[in-house]
Image (tube, rainbow, N blue to C red; front, top):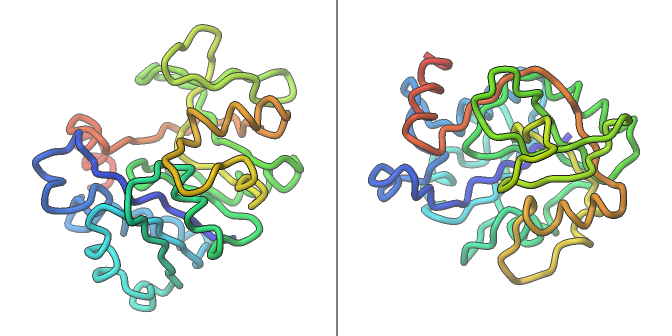
Length: 228
């Protein structure tokens, strides 16, 4: 399955580091974080990538090229202006496969993505989100599900009634593009998920695998400890 990685943001919480490099290229144990993402995915048998780049994206293209030196295939979709997580997908519409695994360029989830993909295919839904049961209570919950693991609410601002948290790995059918307006900034989490929920087309893959967010200095240090 195609692996699509969101790597276009400005990473303002990591300034001044991200004034010089894009967030996904911040070094961790001597490698850009994006390389850790790629190598972990490759270890699971995934070898076809699409990087959604924007801010300082030329650095990413220069470093990774076509992916051949990493034993994978890499294509790129570049935003001329910031489009948000959903807008970046819409911008890449001509390069997306019919189904794809979507990863954040600033979170690391050491989970077998093939199990997530298998669950997605069995669900028949447009989208599946990896939902961490937040055993360690390190972050605020943002997902509520019903007895069949269908997502009934997603809210990053109000955790009332939420028991799980989005852990940064999702699988979608390309049909999701029909829920995204074109040529404008749009967020998956804030604008598109609600539409899918109302259509009963968003499922949760519940698991107890902790994820690591390197989008802040605290998170960056935790991830460095994990990947050292």
